[in-house]
Amino acid sequence: MHRLTSVLLLGGAVLLTSYVNAPAVLTPAPSPVSPADLAGIDAVAPLADDVAQQAERLRARLAAAPETPVTRRDPFSFGPRLPPVPSPDAAGEPPMPAVQTDPVIEWPTLVALLTDGGDPEARTSVLGMDEGIEILKAGETIGGFLVREITVTSVEIEHVATSTVTRLSIR
Image (cartoon, rainbow, N blue to C red; front, side):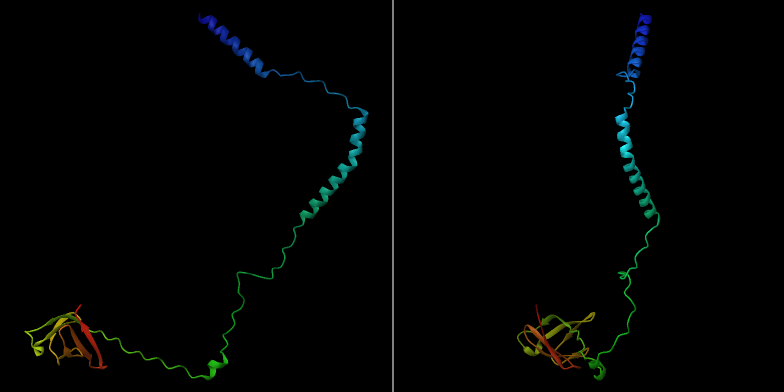
Protein backbone atom coordinates (compact mmCIF):
# COMPACT_ATOMS: atom_id res chain seq x y z
CA MET A 1 0.00 0.00 0.00
CA HIS A 2 2.85 2.32 0.66
CA ARG A 3 4.18 1.79 -2.80
CA LEU A 4 0.89 2.79 -4.42
CA THR A 5 0.63 5.94 -2.29
CA SER A 6 4.17 6.98 -3.19
CA VAL A 7 3.56 6.49 -6.94
CA LEU A 8 0.29 8.50 -6.84
CA LEU A 9 1.90 11.29 -4.86
CA LEU A 10 4.89 11.51 -7.20
CA GLY A 11 2.67 11.43 -10.29
CA GLY A 12 0.44 14.23 -8.87
CA ALA A 13 3.48 16.39 -8.16
CA VAL A 14 4.78 15.97 -11.73
CA LEU A 15 1.39 16.87 -13.21
CA LEU A 16 1.06 19.94 -10.98
CA THR A 17 4.57 21.19 -11.84
CA SER A 18 4.01 20.77 -15.56
CA TYR A 19 0.67 22.60 -15.31
CA VAL A 20 2.20 25.58 -13.47
CA ASN A 21 5.19 25.87 -15.82
CA ALA A 22 3.32 25.39 -19.10
CA PRO A 23 2.26 28.53 -21.03
CA ALA A 24 -1.46 29.22 -21.14
CA VAL A 25 -1.62 30.02 -24.86
CA LEU A 26 0.78 29.32 -27.64
CA THR A 27 2.82 32.38 -28.57
CA PRO A 28 1.97 33.57 -32.08
CA ALA A 29 4.72 34.04 -34.60
CA PRO A 30 5.86 37.65 -35.08
CA SER A 31 3.99 39.35 -37.91
CA PRO A 32 6.03 40.99 -40.65
CA VAL A 33 6.09 44.83 -40.67
CA SER A 34 4.21 46.23 -43.64
CA PRO A 35 5.53 49.10 -45.79
CA ALA A 36 2.62 51.28 -44.55
CA ASP A 37 3.76 50.82 -40.95
CA LEU A 38 7.33 51.76 -41.93
CA ALA A 39 6.04 54.92 -43.65
CA GLY A 40 4.15 55.92 -40.46
CA ILE A 41 7.26 55.42 -38.35
CA ASP A 42 9.32 57.50 -40.78
CA ALA A 43 6.69 60.29 -40.68
CA VAL A 44 6.96 60.55 -36.87
CA ALA A 45 10.78 60.58 -36.87
CA PRO A 46 11.13 64.41 -37.33
CA LEU A 47 8.74 64.95 -34.41
CA ALA A 48 10.79 62.61 -32.22
CA ASP A 49 13.98 64.48 -33.19
CA ASP A 50 12.33 67.81 -32.25
CA VAL A 51 11.33 66.43 -28.83
CA ALA A 52 14.88 65.16 -28.27
CA GLN A 53 16.31 68.63 -29.14
CA GLN A 54 13.91 70.37 -26.72
CA ALA A 55 14.86 67.94 -23.96
CA GLU A 56 18.54 68.66 -24.61
CA ARG A 57 17.93 72.44 -24.36
CA LEU A 58 16.09 72.00 -21.04
CA ARG A 59 18.95 69.92 -19.64
CA ALA A 60 21.40 72.66 -20.67
CA ARG A 61 19.27 75.34 -18.92
CA LEU A 62 19.09 73.29 -15.74
CA ALA A 63 22.83 72.62 -15.74
CA ALA A 64 23.52 76.28 -14.92
CA ALA A 65 22.01 76.96 -11.49
CA PRO A 66 20.19 80.27 -11.26
CA GLU A 67 21.67 82.86 -8.91
CA THR A 68 19.83 83.54 -5.70
CA PRO A 69 18.16 86.94 -5.72
CA VAL A 70 19.44 89.63 -3.37
CA THR A 71 17.08 89.94 -0.44
CA ARG A 72 15.97 93.42 0.42
CA ARG A 73 14.34 92.56 3.71
CA ASP A 74 15.73 90.40 6.53
CA PRO A 75 13.11 89.61 9.18
CA PHE A 76 15.82 88.40 11.59
CA SER A 77 17.86 91.59 11.86
CA PHE A 78 16.53 94.91 13.00
CA GLY A 79 19.23 97.27 11.76
CA PRO A 80 21.56 99.47 13.76
CA ARG A 81 20.31 100.77 17.08
CA LEU A 82 19.94 104.53 17.15
CA PRO A 83 20.83 106.48 20.32
CA PRO A 84 17.80 107.86 22.18
CA VAL A 85 16.97 111.45 21.42
CA PRO A 86 15.79 113.47 24.44
CA SER A 87 12.53 115.27 23.93
CA PRO A 88 12.68 119.08 24.01
CA ASP A 89 10.14 119.25 26.87
CA ALA A 90 12.14 116.97 29.17
CA ALA A 91 15.40 118.83 28.64
CA GLY A 92 14.21 122.15 30.18
CA GLU A 93 12.27 120.79 33.17
CA PRO A 94 13.93 120.07 36.50
CA PRO A 95 13.59 116.49 37.73
CA MET A 96 10.49 115.70 39.74
CA PRO A 97 11.08 115.43 43.49
CA ALA A 98 10.55 112.03 45.04
CA VAL A 99 7.12 111.62 46.58
CA GLN A 100 7.27 111.12 50.29
CA THR A 101 5.05 108.40 51.59
CA ASP A 102 3.94 108.07 55.14
CA PRO A 103 5.63 105.26 57.02
CA VAL A 104 3.48 102.21 57.44
CA ILE A 105 2.42 101.89 61.04
CA GLU A 106 2.05 98.40 62.42
CA TRP A 107 -0.74 98.78 64.91
CA PRO A 108 -1.10 96.42 67.87
CA THR A 109 -4.05 94.05 67.92
CA LEU A 110 -6.77 94.15 70.58
CA VAL A 111 -6.84 90.80 72.33
CA ALA A 112 -9.27 91.47 75.20
CA LEU A 113 -10.89 94.13 77.39
CA LEU A 114 -10.95 93.60 81.16
CA THR A 115 -13.34 95.35 83.54
CA ASP A 116 -13.68 95.37 87.32
CA GLY A 117 -17.38 95.91 87.92
CA GLY A 118 -18.92 98.97 86.27
CA ASP A 119 -16.10 101.43 87.05
CA PRO A 120 -14.84 103.05 83.78
CA GLU A 121 -11.52 103.90 85.42
CA ALA A 122 -10.87 100.23 86.17
CA ARG A 123 -11.02 99.10 82.50
CA THR A 124 -7.87 97.49 81.12
CA SER A 125 -6.93 96.54 77.57
CA VAL A 126 -4.89 93.55 76.52
CA LEU A 127 -2.91 94.38 73.35
CA GLY A 128 -0.84 92.04 71.21
CA MET A 129 2.40 93.77 70.11
CA ASP A 130 5.12 92.06 68.07
CA GLU A 131 5.63 88.73 69.81
CA GLY A 132 4.21 89.66 73.21
CA ILE A 133 1.06 90.73 75.05
CA GLU A 134 0.79 93.97 77.04
CA ILE A 135 -1.85 94.90 79.64
CA LEU A 136 -2.45 98.69 79.61
CA LYS A 137 -4.81 101.23 81.20
CA ALA A 138 -5.87 104.59 79.72
CA GLY A 139 -2.97 107.08 79.61
CA GLU A 140 -0.18 104.45 79.54
CA THR A 141 2.32 104.18 76.66
CA ILE A 142 4.21 101.22 75.28
CA GLY A 143 6.33 100.87 72.10
CA GLY A 144 5.49 104.35 70.79
CA PHE A 145 1.71 103.95 71.30
CA LEU A 146 -0.46 105.85 73.82
CA VAL A 147 -3.73 104.34 75.01
CA ARG A 148 -6.09 107.37 75.00
CA GLU A 149 -9.46 105.84 75.86
CA ILE A 150 -10.92 102.44 76.73
CA THR A 151 -14.64 101.84 76.15
CA VAL A 152 -16.74 98.73 76.66
CA THR A 153 -16.07 97.44 73.08
CA SER A 154 -13.00 99.32 71.81
CA VAL A 155 -9.69 101.02 72.55
CA GLU A 156 -8.48 104.32 71.06
CA ILE A 157 -4.72 104.33 70.43
CA GLU A 158 -2.42 107.15 69.27
CA HIS A 159 0.89 106.66 67.49
CA VAL A 160 3.05 109.17 69.36
CA ALA A 161 5.61 109.86 66.57
CA THR A 162 3.02 110.69 63.87
CA SER A 163 0.07 111.72 66.07
CA THR A 164 -2.12 109.26 64.14
CA VAL A 165 -5.11 107.94 66.06
CA THR A 166 -7.02 104.71 65.46
CA ARG A 167 -9.73 102.76 67.21
CA LEU A 168 -9.37 99.00 67.76
CA SER A 169 -12.62 97.07 68.30
CA ILE A 170 -13.36 93.63 69.64
CA ARG A 171 -14.51 91.31 66.91
